[in-house]
Length: 386
Image 1 (cartoon, helix red, strand yellow):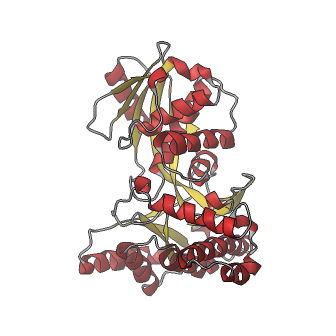
Image 2: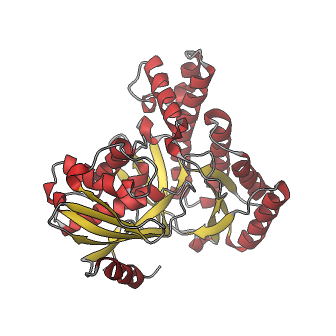
Image 3: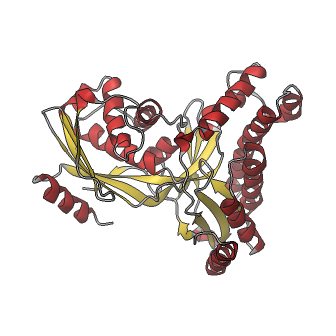
């Protein structure tokens, strides 16, 4: 997607020049799923795919929002009229929510409104955090245009609040932090308890490796209650174990913790969170030791946990993982919120074509919609383009 195209479309739409174009990426999570709202560890990397917004400030309190990826016209609303949870099924609420959340945080400069034109290459419904890309792109644009005193982690928190309180999706902090803070060539080790971050080198090409994303094209919607139910189940598990968050239960005490839980569903959720936090630690150890191939089995173990304990997989995701591993991948797992979306596959770069054909053939044989399979390299986080 050319930045000049976004600029030209803004000009044709609004009759003026934008003050700049900002981009924020989607993300794929390498390991650590559903751990972020449990104060745990996650390890995302930014995608080359981005949401781009061309933006110009207004002074009349009007917010005009348009997407070149939607057949909708311009959505116009007064900043004073933004109300949480008033609309739940439109793309523009993610952008409007950021304006609302910035104002709620005391940044009254955004009350003047803005003209916004959006284009995104982040696949929607694929578990690649297309919503966080929208939020962070506009959040960074407004932060820089108004000179707001916000660090990247602070901006991520405001965008998370937009999604939690305005849109109504109880997501953790991972997606927005990844979009705002990731660095090219690295995976981001994020401790969601204190928001400390470490950029972990993840140069796949240098080792002859590739990371594939398999978009099953099965759409999911995190607002449908399944995500919230699992979050509530994890919180109940923490309460029953006498801790604030499941992060407080050491992995070494897993068996003792499970023995204290009578509810089989809560027990499964707790087991996933504790073991996936441990898998993040294992992956970092392998990467620090320079043994990237060794993370493959850890990814596959993570998928089994998501499938069997958290129960958020689906036949298409399971087929992608099983087929990739049978065809010679080092490991694979679903990524994101589940119930569709995408899987990640670690493999030799030379095996990408064969793996892709094997996965596509397996989906065709099973009568599934043809997946979208593409390699990704760790990209940069949000930035101004022009």
